[in-house]
Image 1 (tube, rainbow, N blue to C red):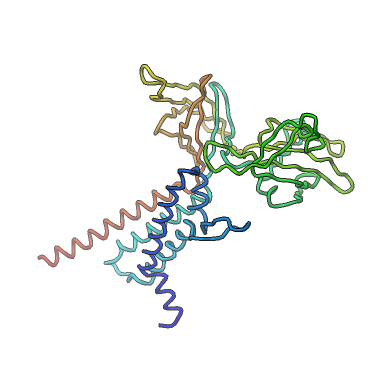
Image 2: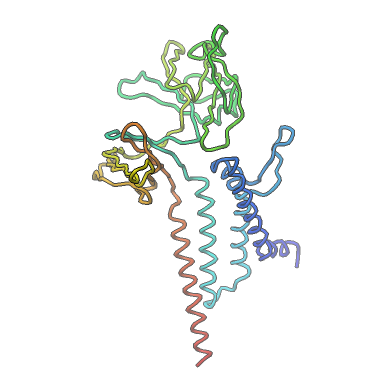
Length: 376
């Protein structure tokens, strides 16, 4: 065989598939043990959603093993080429071909879900109405222009942009943003008699200390940035923005008022969600939750009918691409915490499972006919 045919033969070989499955086994094993010291979100991002697993080495990230994304891509390529090159397209092999196609769709769906799925939470007390949820890990810089009479004009900038770029320019805001300092995680403290790190805003009385990034799920990082704003000859003083600073800060630029804040990234719903009642049952003689449920009302913006839905454990609410799970509840007042999963690729596992089942049925039926024919 020429080199190209040899390469294609290797890509479609069972040996490569075994190597890939062995790599996945190692990643799952190591990732499971890593969850002892790190959270699920960190392990998924570093081990299963990455092209390479890396370790820090002299200020660089040194790749040491293929990540889940790379191995999954290799498996998809291997299954596709083996289906095209190793299986004859005859009626006898219809079932086998369908099984391969089903597994390819299943792997593609898993990879796509890791890219498009957004998880967030919404907290509501009874009679509260929410139209957005908040991401548990991602944050954003918000610039609010309140000069309009009927609405606020809001511009959001992902926090990763502040981390990557020293100067941010956007046609949606009338000034440039200069990033003097950025911290993935920081601890704020009162400056007392000393001058704070910023010239304006609450940062005039605060000091900032860089701390290591948290990787466990029960601790939240505090992204912090020291910014200034400029346009042409107009230059502002520095302002400190941080997730731990609750609420917005007033900022005047070129005689116009704005409000700025770093907050959790928001996922806006195409409907309003109202918590009508929350029920919490415990086991007799203890505080251990037995069952808790939320009765919510959905009011779509498109004019569809309003409907009430009861959400409880193992019984989520599905609406479009949104799925609401009963995650937790408040302690002091009747309130509910709902986990929100936004997934446009939710149907991939169902489609792939149907195709695989159909292929297995075809494969069994065809071989059963051949067996009965040989026996007769």
